[in-house]
Image (cartoon, rainbow, N blue to C red; front, side, top):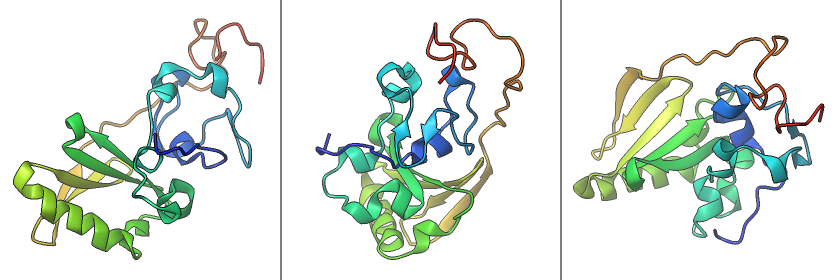
Length: 169
């Protein structure tokens, strides 16, 4: 890591889905506490522990790129060939503010020869930044994610009662 910590940021706690917690994307995780961060950080499920946004990993991204300040979470996929810009649906144009848009378009142009893509996500809809500077609307390409209401009984460790053995947080 770039020597950074999540702290109270928590944007991934809103934007990223976590199957172990039955937490859909774009809704706040019930364990996130404003100004304090994750309430179960030490016992968080693997889906959370395995995720790290690019702001944590890349020292070249300054504080402006911190997800709670930028309005989006950057993360790679497909072995690093895709840079995903997961926008907070309440700020769908956040990526267009300086310095973000110019930098993202620069990455798309520079990486095209090597097969790198930059994808802009707003909910389930995706756009790919074209190397020439435009945007290609890929449409709604993510399936809808829905989990049962939290009032139902569940098997141990299935989100309602995370971490396993815990009675409440």
